[in-house]
Length: 253
Ligand code: NAP
Image 1 (cartoon, protein in one colour):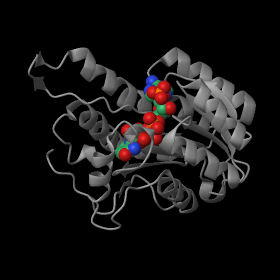
Image 2: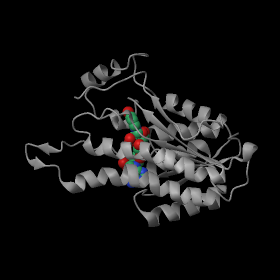
Image 3: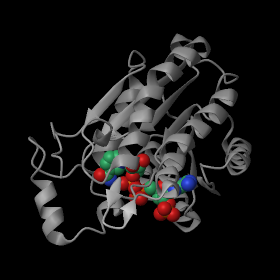
């Protein structure tokens, strides 16, 4: 698909990976709607992109319905959805204080997995009515999993479960939405240098940047955004989960 003039909705677009996707897609001519819980971040990014900032809690049906409606009103039916909203709250299954509170587990599943599904269902419902493009393609949905879907580290029980759910959802969604000419792909990043990593002490940051096999550096939001453009361009990539990690395989801890 040619993204020039295309309406794009980016969740978690007010920070990190989502923000860079918004900037890169805007440069290519896409009409951007930045959806985020963090409205201040969304506003800054939208201003850079000539797009709209919309407050959205992806875990809430009501909030997402409202946000998708506002995005449609501003830019028309979205033909590109990038699901980047996410949280990575760590927690062991059992720690020295006892079992992980169930609500801590639920909170991560709600944002990462249920939030992704919530956005897919709402955007796809509109996307199926969009004008078809080349190959009768109507749109593309890109979800964000993580290498933690495969090699979750100790303390990532909730995060890994949520990202594994996104990986499993990918092919089902691609199969179902194929009838409408909608592709679904998922990117599983390794270590990407974003505000999500900013809380780490410099030694940990340094040590993590040596973990990938090659290149020996942290990934950047630009690396991710480039893959988004590749996925837009190549209509044959569908139902795929792509690791973006420099052959990184995280150890248990
Ligand atoms: P980030 O900079 O923290 O951006 C995530 C954005 O999502 C934040 O603006 C956050 O807002 C927002 N958000 C959180 N909960 C939300 C909700 N309920 N509704 C709407 N927006 C919400 O993180 P990032 O590093 O760019 O991560 C983007 C995605 O990549 C996430 O799904 C993450 O799991 C995945 N990922 C990242 C890495 C990495 O190394 N960075 C690796 C693998 C996968 P607040 O700031 O208000 O919370």
